[in-house]
Image: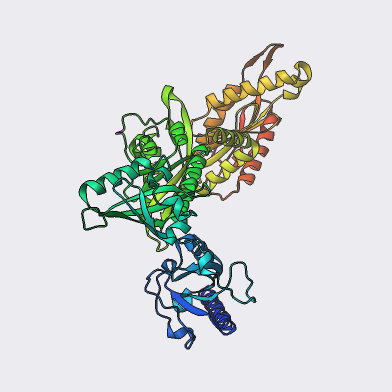
Length: 573
């Protein structure tokens, strides 16, 4: 096995090296194919690092950057594209994306990433300019800069907020002509939901003379809304001309990303709330970070008595309860088991499924399945756990019913043939002090023939009841089929004790059985076998008892017969 392990490890290492060589060749080919191509290397966390000499790409231009993180190189609108490409890279080993650099947003770049972390500790990216929508083989085309919409513009306003003048970039941002802006109050173009925030910043700037900022939506000429961050500089107290300088930055891409994120979060929360399972998230200190309403329903927990929350998550946090309150309905045993599973998930990163019982109001018991999974960082550090909680009472009942049907005889409630033999095998594996009693009812066929099968079934039910009453609580009763029964004697000290148990069985069955169609006299033939010092299989022991039972039937006395009784001393016969 050790040799196999070494062989597998060597094979994996060779495959990794081959993939690395292939990636280097592909990167070199791209660099030679595109004259304007450059390279960039990042560590596993995405930070820009020097190109390792081991890559063998000396002589090719390296993208110069003052930014530490690779994502900061591109404009804000394209960062999510690079994040998605980075995730694909980790899955597939290679990824491709298009983005614009902050140094020149008018030019699109095609970026191809190669995962060389296992061999060189870096991700290698090859970048070359390409127009939006152009294929790799097309000539790169630079967009005409004047047609690009500026993202920064300025305006000057008087103390009442009327526009005195504005630069060309500001006009192009909003699509207005100079005469449509100058002399007009900016306030009227602000979204009504943001007007109070703008007025608050304006008044604070006028009153204090300090720089103020506000983020609002302003209407373009085409009727659309543009999110802008506006910084106000107060020059009203200086020399003429006196004015307020407003510097406006287009943040619509950032706000769109935030809104999209909020929409995704709202959708995710809605999905979590609508799930049929209860969900629970804990941090590393076992504090409840999140739970859905379904969890409260399953565990019959209450959110009453909690301190009201404040802030953006107040609606959810107001209904968050502690772990102790959530687990209060679990039985003590289930709670201890659940706590142990959480502890192993937090300390060792172990995933486990555990089933326990919850004791609900009015004494109802429910089966609860808890699937606990650790939350891990890429480094492997455990930051918390998430648990899925399901009410599996119905499936547990169905499972128990199936187990019961597979184990017990439907008519009598005794073990069926397979399960009683299985029980005997298990007993023989652990103890030699084991015996069996083979019981066969006499004249049972005549009962079926004269009184009918329902009467025969009733006889079997009453016989089972009598057998259980005459047995020890440690013994097991099974129905082999028809009117034949087998009793497994556990922990019997010798043949004498086994025979005493058999006599009690014979006496219990030598009686009158009352039936709706009349009374019948019961009698049974009984055979006994004991393991003792011999080594017997379950089948061999049953066969001995069966032979002894036929000897009892031949005697027609309804008395038990011990297998191989010719070996017993005279005093034990």
